[in-house]
Length: 140
Image (tube, rainbow, N blue to C red; front, side, top):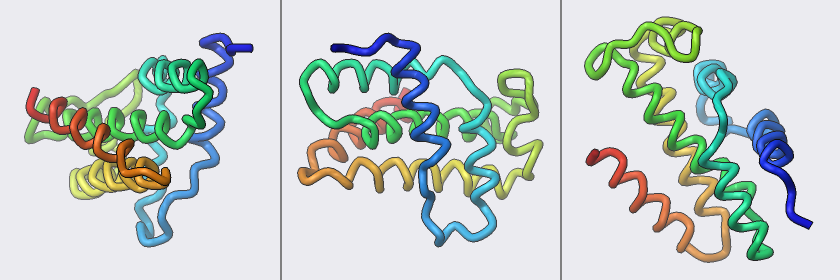
């Protein structure tokens, strides 16, 4: 039986909340979790889960990777060098909350964590697709 969008969103939220980030990040974990906890509809990972679930595939890592890439893009877009937005979803942007340098590194780390998840599959196809989509997003 396929799950509802609300059930899939709850699955994504739970997965992201429990996601073990690389211990190599040192003191950056809070700066990475902060933009992930700001909510949102989680449309991208919910769609990823729905498609994979309908095909009978395990999708939580891939869905989380898509959300990490999306969050990376928001963190970087808010930086003073780009859109210079001080707020995101009614909260201070990451660069306001943690400083510009920490926000930049947090965005980079979110992207790296996304690829770590995508490359956890037995085939590199998920990582390739994520790279292709990410480059398209960055290129505008």
